[in-house]
Amino acid sequence: MVTHSLRARDIATNAVLALIGEFGNFVLRTDGTVTTPGAAVATLRFGKEAFGPSSGGSALANQMEFDFNAAGHAMPVATATIEAFDGTIVIHCSVAKKRGDINTNNDTLVIEPGDTVTCDKFTYTALKS
Image 1 (cartoon, rainbow, N blue to C red):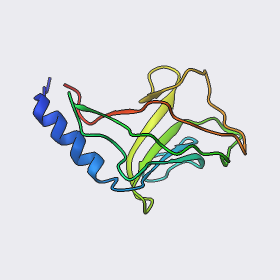
Image 2: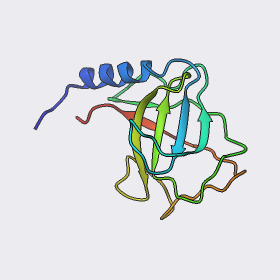
Image 3: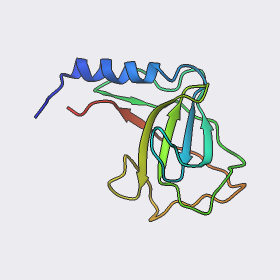
């Protein structure tokens, strides 16, 4: 089993998050992959600094702008991407009630067109300990 030091985990997390740059996006999507992302269902914009610095191997996202008029989709949200301002995908992950990279409180997350979407808390960890 590979184990990373706390310093290595902080450096790795900060390096990945630096790729987002200023004013990146957190996009909830239907099923897809990093190279073929699913349809965008809701887009929340990060501020000038997307995340605070890594501490303990994880970084907490700074406040995101709400999506007050989500695109919505009949299919449930299954993935999410964190993207640089220019749309370059930096992180792709799963969204599910249990065992997702991002866990929700609902069995399925369906966002209707015009819904308001928010994210209360988001923590990113690049490497496991």
